[in-house]
Length: 286
Image 1 (tube, one colour):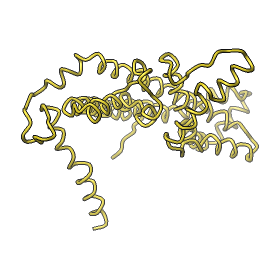
Image 2 (image 1 turned 90 degrees about the vertical axis):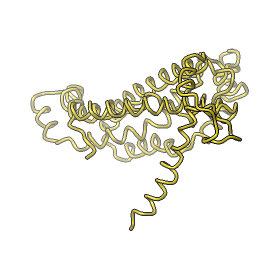
Image 3 (image 1 turned 90 degrees about the horizontal axis):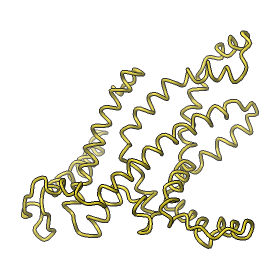
Image 4 (image 1 turned 180 degrees about the horizontal axis):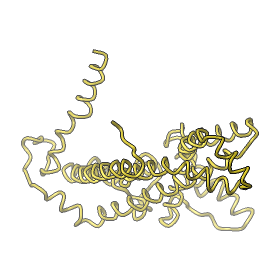
């Protein structure tokens, strides 16, 4: 009985709307409805690879998502090890709080701050112009700079949250391992290399493999609030393309087909990633 309200909400809001997936196989017209629209089979899916914009969006999604995953793993591991080496608890807690706080900010808030800072009249361009004599750079309007800007800002926002996971692993390492290494004459670097990193390896493998399911998730909230037509060539991803093609341009069937294609690929990747995590680190949900 306690689970019943939550179960009803899941059925209504998660499974009920899945009837709309039929639009992916129809030439959907809102005034005709799902039952009255013409059935066209897989034509919408074929158009995904016929349109240059859709293939570019898939390519951009893969590039941005893969780089986010790689950078989003390396930096938290590095920072967790550095932070674990700090012996002054006050300094350690202060740094941990500062790097963790951005995780609680919404992308709407961060996007507003970034637009003010990185705009042509923003503080960074003001500094570049007056201190170094460099012409203003439109970071959010230059296709070559948009991806690095997206990746760096995503890293700044989320690496503190990921770092806590690795810090918890380091905290759980048996101190006797370090004591034995110190008795054997190991330096701090050698202790990190031969004790800390091997102890973190199972968690690193689990997080890395489970991240495979996010290969087609480049962050709609972030890019939607920061991109513009000038950077569609490098910044348009599957989610933003679906939003424009379906809700703005009225191609509801095609937009549904693109979204369903992404969901199916992500579903397959999630299954594969869980199998790899189980084989490599004996990780399982049930």
